[in-house]
Length: 257
Image 1 (cartoon, rainbow, N blue to C red):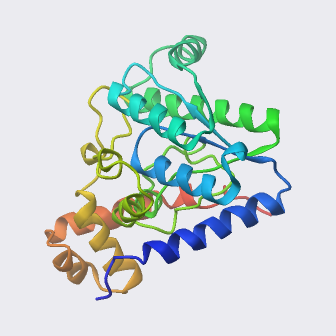
Image 2 (image 1 turned 180 degrees about the horizontal axis):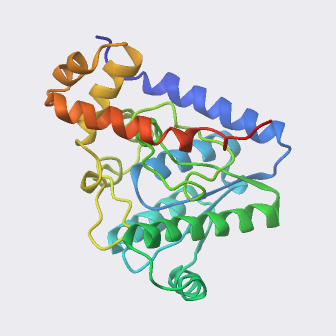
Image 3 (image 1 turned 180 degrees about the vertical axis):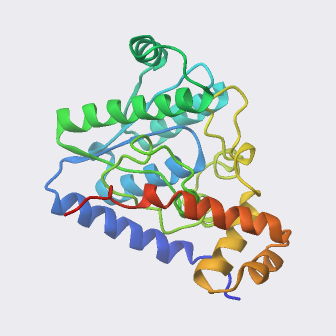
């Protein structure tokens, strides 16, 4: 099986060129992204600065009460280090207002997704106000499993790192000189207190990525892919089921056209 490792220098150059082409074709003035303090948004932010220059990149930090203080601190430090325009918008009041307007009887998942969708609204308000594109921060591990909010963090104009698995994004983060605490940080959507990615995923990213790489890229069977990732077959089956059930997130809404 081919290695999951990437040539970070070559890959970062390829993404930088892609960002420039997308923004240029749209005749946009630059980009805005949600900067969470996690590895994905940090890598996308660093690459956008390389592609466009600091004057054409903006960041919104949009914490909620469940956002870890360390994540917010990391996001602020990254924006300062890059010298980009950055704004912090606390989203609690917006989320609570929407819940009250709609009737506050929803479960945890609906409330969590509302946070992501409020962030999307703020990003597009900023983008539309200034002629910017919204740069998405989703990676391939998340995209393949539908581990994002439809029309929330999945609502973006382009996805610079959606072809890279989470472990590959971490490699890029190290190459780009991000702080180790950022590129090695456990993935955490933080949509409720203590929320970690592994709370909802069938396996940690180190094994999940090996499975997906074997199953999707190497065209190995489910059993062979699970074996390569050192996972029980039933876990491999859950991964495949999660991918199949989330296919609607990766396509346009069905219609008769």
